[in-house]
Image (cartoon, rainbow, N blue to C red):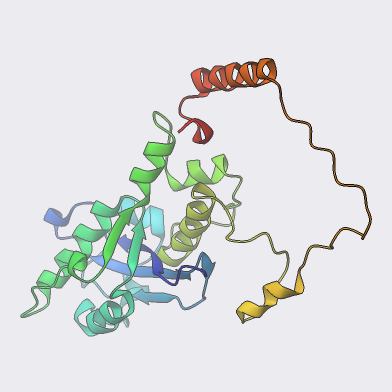
Length: 238
């Protein structure tokens, strides 16, 4: 049975890098996945920060003060956002940054003492990437190149687009697709029954099984140890 746990890939855009400089969240993007399948039950919201973006941040996300002028303030969307993420595992690339900004927004809402980590389990995909690829660049762009994920369409950063890219990266890092079924799958679990192995014909000679001898096993083990030494930790040795 597929894991029914909700996983939500989350990203934010902000007016700048430092909370202490009065910077605010201006966009939240979330992509939901259940059982390693994207559900298309996404969350996307632009937010009016009542301040301009810093020049460096504006070059990154391109979201202008004029564009945000008619968008809701964070206090107006806080309940809907928390209802959406409640009980899910939030997967965030460089989670401390986004969590700190969102918790700061919570603190600015009158009477609110809420923190994101009290509503959702938080997983930092950057920590996971660093564990898997120590000493290498592990930005989203670098991971896209490493896993052959196309992201040339990302001219500017955007919270929803980056969340979608992170979902692709996470699936690649943690083992790819859930199944080997090709094409569109049925909406019910019975779809898998359409694929079955053809039984061997009656009276067919049994398949010949040739087992490795002791010398071959020793040689194979030595070869695996050479790979281990050259490339670091390998799954089959641990």
